Length: 589
Image (cartoon, rainbow, N blue to C red; front, side, top):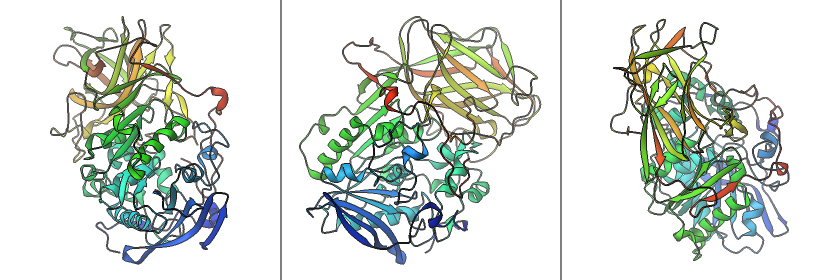
C-alpha cells in the first residue's frame, strides 16, 4: 500500500490471542431473533481483507446497517463496565455482544437494524498495516460502508455509530462521501488529534496518549508507531493535519452529542465538529454527564433510534422538529438545567470581561488602575504559593455557557519558556469546591480547563475569535527570562449555573490542576518546561482579563423553558472510583 506519509511502523503491542481474540473462522448461528455471522472476510482496496461480525434480524429482511469502526477488538474482551466501572454503565446493562464504545447489537437488531462490528485494517487479524485516524483508514472505511450498503440483507442506507475513536472515525469516513452513507451519530470524539489529544496548548500529554496509542495496536501486522511519530512531529505540520478530518466535506445528516465533562479529550473536538461540518440536517446535544452513561442510557438510546429511524428508514417522526441545539447548564455533578437554542455558539449570550487583580485576588468588572503582580511556584517546590487564584462572586443567578478566552501578562525570571495550567472552578456559598463530572468517570472535576506553552502562543488570526483563541503551533517563540509578555489561553467550553453567593474561581499554576493516581486514565502533562517562579501581571499597562459568555435570560429551576435534569440515582451505578483491572501485556498509563 502506498502511504501519503512515511509512517513509522513497528511491531504490534501484542498478539490478538493475548487479549482473548481467537484466530478468524467464519461461523453463523441463530440466537433467538438474531442471526450472528462471525469473522466474515470483507475485501477492501489494495488487496486488504478485514474481518467483521454482523448481527441482523433472523427473518432476513433488509434493514439499515450500523457500522462500528474500531481498533478495540470486535471480540469485546474489555467492555466498558469492566474497564471503567465508574463510567455510568451498570453491570448487566449491555448485552455480551457489545463492543467497547459500540452500539449494543441486541438493542439495535430488536429495533430492525443490523450492526457491523469491524476490526480496522492492521488490528487484530485484519490485513494491512495499521494506521490510525489517517487518510488510508478513511478510504478503507469508505469501502466498508459501500460493502454494507450493497448486501442482500441491507436496505442500502448505512449509518455510523459509536463513541470516542468510533466518532473520530465517523468524521474521517464521512468526509470521503461514501454514496451509501445516509446518517452519522458522532458521540464525543476529537476532530483535531494534535490540539485536542496530543498537545494541549502545546504542552505534551503524557498519560492518556501513550496508553491509548499502545491499546490500539494489537494485531498480527505492523502498526503505526504513534509515539515515535509524536516525537518526530512536535509542531502542527502536514502529518498532524492529516489526522484532523476535513469536516467541511461532511454533508450527511448528523446527530452530534458532546459533553462539557470530557475536558481535555472530546469536548472541544465534538463541538468543533458540529460547527464545521457541512451537513444541512444537523443537531447538537451538549450534556453534563458521563459519555458512556449517556450513550447507553434509555434517553440516549431513544434519541439515537429516532434519528436513525428518520434518516435510515424514512420514518415520519419528531426529529425534523428537534431544536437545533439542546444543552445542559450544570449546577453540580448530579443536577443541571436543560435548555434549547438555534445554533452553537449560542445566540443570546453576552461576552463578559472580568479583569484580574493580583492585589485583591478578584475578577473585577473594571480594569484595576494600579499595577500589581502575584507569584506562584511553577514546580511546587515550596518557594512560593503553588497557584494564583482570582474570584468572581455572584450577586444574582448567572449562567456561563461556551468557551472562554484568558488574556494574561506573564513573566518567568528563570526560564525562556513556561507552561501555564488553567482551571475554572465553582465554589458554593460556603466557599467549598463544587465537583463536576470529568473525563467519563470522575465526579470532582472542574468547570473547564485550559493550557498553554508560552513558546506556542502565536495565534491563528483567521480562526481566532473574541472568545476562542486558536494557536498555529507552527513554530516555537522563546522569551528572554524576566520579560513580561502577553498570551491568550483557550479555556474549553462549559455550561455552569451560579446562584447568588456562589463564586467562579480562576486558577493558574504550573502543573495539572486536577490530578489522579495511576492507573486511572486522565490527561496529565509530566513533560514540562517549567523552572522556578511564574509571575502574573495585572492592572495598568498589563491588563490581564477573562472573556466568558453569559446567557442573557436566566430562569430559576422549575420555570418554563428550563427542564431540570438529574443524573441516575447513585445506587444504580458503581459509587467509588476504582482503577480498572490490569490488562494483559498492556501497562496502564
